[in-house]
Length: 378
Image 1: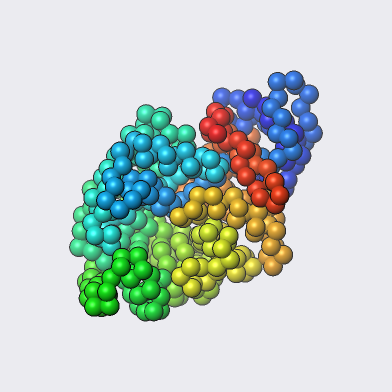
Image 2: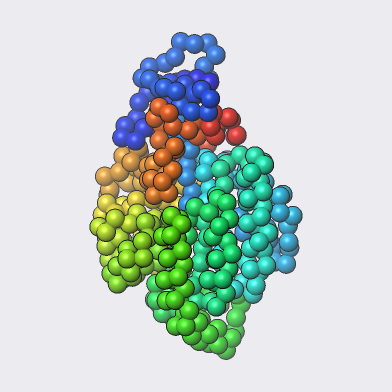
């Protein structure tokens, strides 16, 4: 296959030219147009590496599209997968919550069903994107460690993140923000909220530290990439570094982001944060970290279409020094490197032909075609 008349978004430059794919890999690319008549006309669009998503909660909404609605697993997985590739995402780490009982047991009830669907469809070639597992470990629960130990050997486990969403620290330093978020989501009365808040603080004090140490030790032993989550202080970052974290997910303060970047952790922020212009929780803005040069990876988090949109927004933002190739690396080469996936994330000879053809219309950038290992999937 030859894709002609495109702007090739390489790691450090954009080249007007063409690209050849053979046996699922990029064989070569060149400046200038191909003269072969069978070449696909890219109509002057941008040809990017397939996007790599490290932390998406998107799968949940398909398994439970409405409260108390339990959707068939393979249908849910198929719909989720279709949305991923339609937004240019060819490698997906589906985040599943372990030890998270905030939804009244809903997430715990669907956990095994989701994991089984990810593994089954991955091995039967039913999905268009490459799906892997991201185990999100909510530390302040007595069941978290035992659940993790049951799941850590599952095929496709590629990332583990350590989370503590209890009030008074990390994402929820502000008690007002915590109460607004929790009461708004779970419709708790003030009395119920008081009881819930007290319970979460007690659980964190009992379980967070031992679970953090034990799960991190398992990851080091098995070579699973480890991520911190919502680090807010230098002490948090130093602890994450000492535990062996490679990624700092969603640091909540400038201090934590700067320290993480300086200590070699890849700073991951949400692409919705870029698109919306700030954090919905009142924490540090991703575009501010871009201006400081400490933004390394973007994740679509809860909105898959935000990834590609965010790349072009960052490149157009004059307050930072990101070129379009550098902005695209935030969701291609950098996450691939963080996971040790050396076969993808760049347009380079020998890399997987995971490719996205994007166009712009009236200022909006949209996905026209997507290929995974040279096979068109959108």
